[in-house]
Image (tube, rainbow, N blue to C red):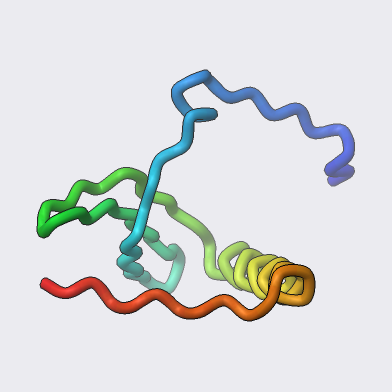
Length: 86
């Protein structure tokens, strides 16, 4: 597929984006489920649920690793966030 010819449409609501500071991952043989949540002051909400095939998830992880490396090369090392306390 020629990605330069893909047209993506998004509603204004989707373009606003959502904040997530917690990710829970579940999987079966066929699919990964990524639940993005926002937890503030002990209260949380599921803000997005993404389903991905294992192959696509692996490509996504590679793309994230490459972009993280580029970011840190340009702006310096990122300090990992602390785990949320329950």
